[in-house]
Length: 511
Image (cartoon, rainbow, N blue to C red; front, side, top):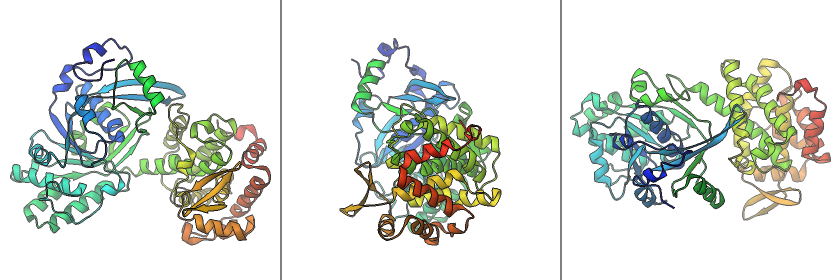
């Protein structure tokens, strides 16, 4: 069986379920510098650029910088930087399966071995855009010398690239770059720009460059949202290889849903012309709306559902969505309570449309998203994602939210640690131990060891250090949580949820 290379494309041509690049796409100029080789970049920005190239809109390829020692660059070299993106998911309750050989990447360069070549590319007149995903710790201010080969940090490397470009074009204000970090931190572009300016001062760079850095370049805040798992398990890899008819060591699976929201003006829209090919690439002066929708509806629903679903015996999101009761809870908590509680002015139809997209993502049969992974740092997630929504829900409707209180009760029960090993606390589900990776695990272990469920609930709700508010003051909330928690302890979690939904009138269920 052939391996995926430029030479093998002609023999792969017979595969009817694979979209292949034309020869012209492989000759496009290099217009993007990308820091990072990870699957998220390949599954979202690189794919979108490839999609635009196929439509004759963007017409540019990507030079990728690999900054870390981990991973294997040889696969990119062996495959002429081609890779297959297998898109699998659900849209409007219909299954989506699409296979695309992406050709947007032209070169992958090691920062340690090819730094001079990277700086040479910095002087290219074709270069317009920088994209990054260096994980959340990549955008950090560290003491860095940009004259090293290479600098240590990502901001240091980027500053060295920008300084080389400034020098190559004698400070030409038209040669600045549009910089779009995709690291999952709030205000990622604003934070990166501040670090670049601080590093420029610390490195003693001339004031003319600092002015050029601020005025000629644009650092955009952005938000990316697409589930792109790592390398498929051996069985899935084998099945896809048989289906495709060729070997691909860079094969990547992604869900069908995608969102790339970017803060920018008309200049940014003009440079990032690939946005024209996909309605889910959104460039606006303010992207807070999309951040709020993702945080409150996707992340918030995950957090309110994870303990409930896991303790009910479901290991993955898809398993829970296949169950009528758990699926009803997930739909109701999102659509009936989290949408009205979003602490941001949002059109209800826009929120509902986003919510139904989230439900499609939860039903994706191709993605194994484990509830236990979602419970990591459960308390911090509950505070950040759900407490503002809960408070706004009360402010707006002045009634006790039945589904949020049920999810909160399951959170308290999940945090009931019974044993500790190697500084990790463990709870118990059906006689089997599960880890509680939460900074508050020890606190909850002490409470469960000494208090009744009613006392524990009120103590936790009153803990303003945890929540920033005294949640016990919300009318009816503590009583509702205690009632749910007591039933879960007496009857079991799944039985409690099933009985609870049995008491709700059918028309109240949102399917």
